Amino acid sequence: MKTFRNRRTMLYIPGNNPAMIQQGGIYGADSILLDLEDAVALNQKDAARTLVRNMIRVTDFYDAEVCVRINHLSTPFGLADLEEIVPLQPSALRYPKTESAEEVAELLAIIEKIEDKHHLPHDRMTLHAMIETAMGVQNVFSIASKFSRIDAITIGGQDLTADMNIVYTADGAGIDFARKRIVMAAKASHIDVIDTVFPDVNDEEGLRKETEYAKRIGFTGKAVINPRQIDVVHDVFSPTEEEIRKAYRIVKEFRTNSKAGIGVFAIDGKMVDAPIVARAEYLLRLANVIIE
Amino acid sequence: MKPITPAQSGTFESSDVIVLIEPMPKNSGRKIEISSTVMQQFGASFQQIVSDMLDQYDMTDIHLIAKDKGALEPTIKARLETAIKRSLGQQEGTL
Image (tube, rainbow over all chains, first blue to last red; front, side):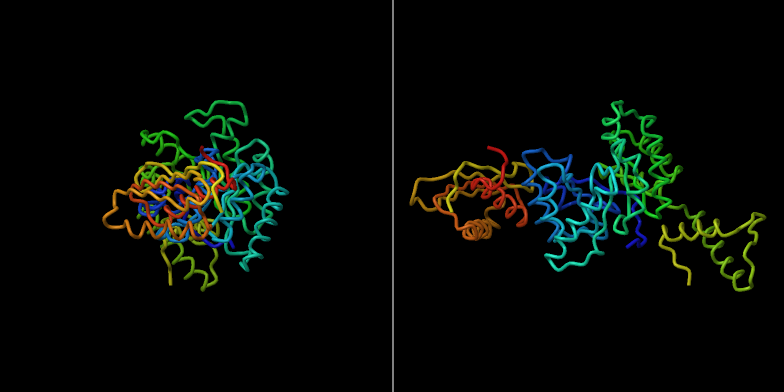
């Protein structure tokens, strides 16, 4: 279930907007997120669900991973979303306001029941848990670590600050603890971790700064709300040519040295050991570089 | 089946279609009005999609108006399905 996939960007697309859905694949985002939740007005939930169902069947999203954010099961829309979307088996479902492992277990039981009804396997479509309440932050490790179908967790900054009764600020101060706790839970569970959206689409410098910070503390990608944000986020999360060359050299020399029974060696006077090699291998996977 | 309430779905945005349904008196059959920015190229196909969808739900005594802004087939079908289900009281939405 935990196969490697580049998820530098996840582009939110409102589920009731046919023009945006049909164009969703052309912008080059790593993931397309068709949203049935916050981007859809309450009196249009049924329309969006039917539209997304029909569009997923026929739309070419090119190489992008296709995810659908459904409504929470506590709403009148969550179960109907599952019944329409699960049979289509998008790459992943994103579940909002995930607060506990028990809640995920209940969700997965419903998903698997629908899959059984349609003779579908239980290991094709993955689940992304969205952490956007204080309770979710507190329980994030058990959510991230207990289920093989969860291959990414994400933080929802706006809802989290609302739940905390604080104002969402550009410096991210209010969600900094949550960001780091969520990152650590993802790392301990060996799954992806996606940062929240940057809401000001006109502030490219602010987006770059926030994305660089997210990368520094361990996020593997960032949600975007406008195609204009994709290039900046890709630029930050993609390794540079110099980094790729260096990583290639490390892995190549590691393999040569391993054959000779040498575990630790030096490149340009700097020690290279297992963690450095692991980091170099990760970077090469990000860059789609394969060493024969 | 017969619509029990007026219903609407879709928008006037590009690549979308707005569908309006209203109930008609008993034994009125179907009254369908379609306008589209691509009527000349795809009008016949649009008519067929509407007829097929109304047949699928066995709809009668219905007045359906569709104003199209270049919607693709999956969008047209989605908007028709939503409007029909809303008119039958199976789903809640606008109107």
